[in-house]
Length: 225
Image 1 (cartoon, rainbow, N blue to C red):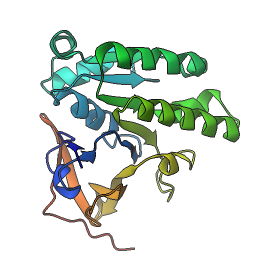
Image 2 (image 1 turned 30 degrees about the vertical axis):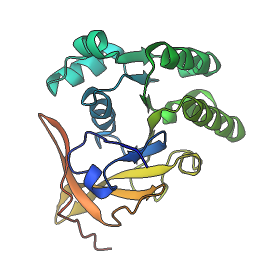
Image 3 (image 1 turned 180 degrees about the vertical axis):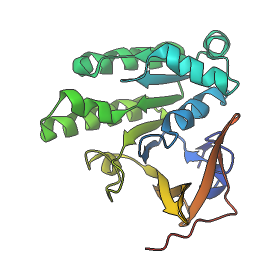
């Protein structure tokens, strides 16, 4: 089985070398967990063309974040075919065709959707939300993209995603935790599932540095309830 490296130090060691080629992975966590940085690193540190689809953050802010971590987004757009797209989730029906067109135009191999949670701001009907999420999933699979779909969860909840459907349409789920241990918050990552992969079942600490997202696969976080 071919695998795509996440380009996140430490993560690939937890998932047998990378994400199975063409799979869709849900990246879920609370506000401030580093989900956007994870997604940017997945694209910017790769040698493959890719698309970052934002439903919330302005493109210039995304590029500023990339620059702070040492990635020249404009140069990557010119040299590698990296593309940043910003869309109003209120017009989500138009987005599917536009994103698919961009995927085919640059022959994108990687896609990041940031974030699926933004859809809930404009679409309150649970059945319609599920349909939209399934449609996004289907479009990405049809185009053989290895993709990350970001979902924001509420602090203290046991849910894996905002709407409770994202994890079921995804081939893998990566959770970003923020535990309170010994009077301080500790960031940690766990692999909830990954298709056809003997992945780590432990919770591993991570940091966000000036070079990006780093996971420590040899270390674990023990959570006492």
